[in-house]
Image (cartoon, rainbow, N blue to C red; front, side, top):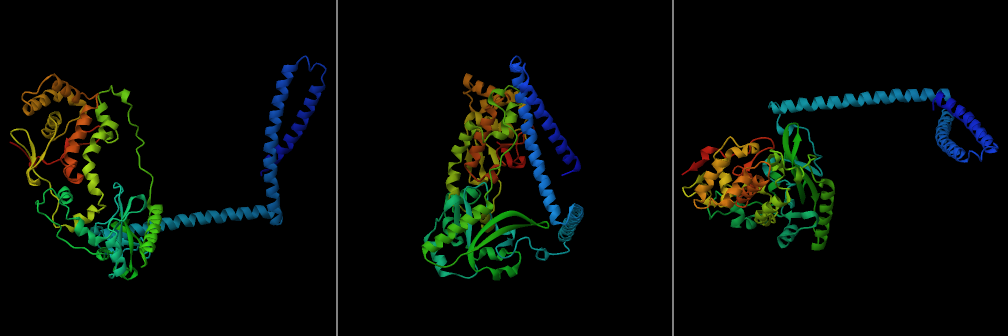
Length: 483
């Protein structure tokens, strides 16, 4: 408490006594009744001021009492002030040391990173980012890590030596799931599950129809991807939760959280797995991400950039989301396997590749390198697709009306006898940047591809682009042929 505050308390007390004296005199005034209403509000205001002052004074007196108590413990006010000054000096010194330490650590990190990127030191020479006891660093080539966009999260069984009891448990519980959509992966079962033609064909549409999984992987597989080979001796058998996208001085790695697993009855093993899920979820679960960029209201669709503004919201718009959801049903069923696709891409000898796209004379869209796969669409959707396919530079939605005649010509080639009033209205709507029709068509086009094969391939074929920029089909036109 400062000297000024002490003086203010004393003056406030004197003022309070004077104010009370004035109130008493007012009450005893013979003319009080004549000025009743005026005096009432004056008394009420005075009472409020008194209460506020008393609260403030009580707080300050409490601070003063605390200050004097501490001063007595330090042998007086002078010694207490000296102690406070010394403490302030020590705190400032500690702050400077902390800042210097952080700066030195940052400079050391950048020095080591620079040496690594220039090839002066190897990956194993980098200092550890994980403790090497409960968490380990793995090379990204392993291909196992959690995908937060997938509802299913995998926890993988890993062992250094074959454990008969635990292997038998996972063989007998092939689809074991617990809370929060976590699935336990037993790697030897992957070979059997991969015999599903639909799943393989979805991931590798370029593969021959008789393609089968041509690999074998056991539960020791992840250990060969440990960054520090000496870590193998620290792992007996247990469950790993893998997360990608980690960085160690410029070297990407997969973080693997290790949970030892002990032998026991089925109930005891399940109890251990339940606790592992609980620990993993508490550590790694995160709130849903969202954009702070507000979506425009439906009744604001009057500007000529409404369609473009709405383009990035195609999967959240209720009507368009329903369209996309219908074509995703098959994908959802396939993902129920809970298989880590990154692992499959790493293990399968067959590699994904883009197919040529052929527009036939009768206006069919065929992908010959995907076993002559035909992409079927409604006439108006196909017309929109071919319009964008014919413009590799892309089209800005704001200028869609300039392409109305070209779109009508394409539609007439698809449906020579179908350019009726309804079709003309559809063409009018889809080239109107003030409407959402173009977004619905783009969503249907996207659905036509992602229902056939995985999105990391499909994204090259459907219409995409950022808000305010031309929307285009990114597929190289060297792969496109018009018959």
